[in-house]
Image (cartoon, rainbow, N blue to C red; front, side):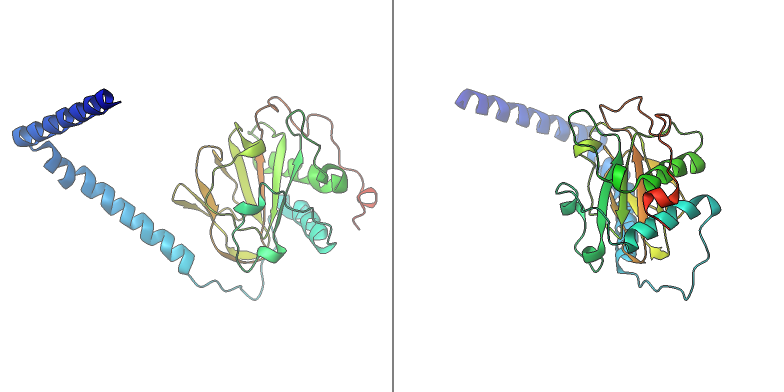
Length: 253
């Protein structure tokens, strides 16, 4: 062990001596500090101020909202019905710690639907809300017709997520697509420090590799995340022949 320690110390001193020699000869470290580090520091400070302003802003709901774009109307109506009926599925133990403890936490919730990798129990929402699940998968096709259909969705109600990278059934997932619906202000998604307004504006990102979180919001906010986890490659919910039943069969009037 002592030999290894001395070898590492010798290597460290050699690296430092080479850095010192380079600095004396060409001012490499000084140029880096004056140029690259200065640019990076300015960019990091600007990003910090922008995110701080996002968190500290005052959010006021308008007196009224215009209706959703037509392609979102059915999905939003069914989301509201599930919410108002008090039958929203409970949030999984894995996702619950990711939801920020704020004024929305008592009414927040998140559930999955669609296909899951082998060995996992089928999501309860597939049978509890069949018309809603099909409408949400159909929404993906309406808003991103060029995107291959996803196998799985995560559906969120008034949930503000902490900074995280997806794991669990999201491990190894394909490129995610997220969009938000409802009457709210704020609620952007922040992906690796970049702020994106996703209110009826779908966004693709890599939820498995990129850290992301929800900006503060006020009002009624639903969001849907579309993805295909490892083990579900090639599975497409709509292509598998799932058809929405009539409203009466789903218990929605």
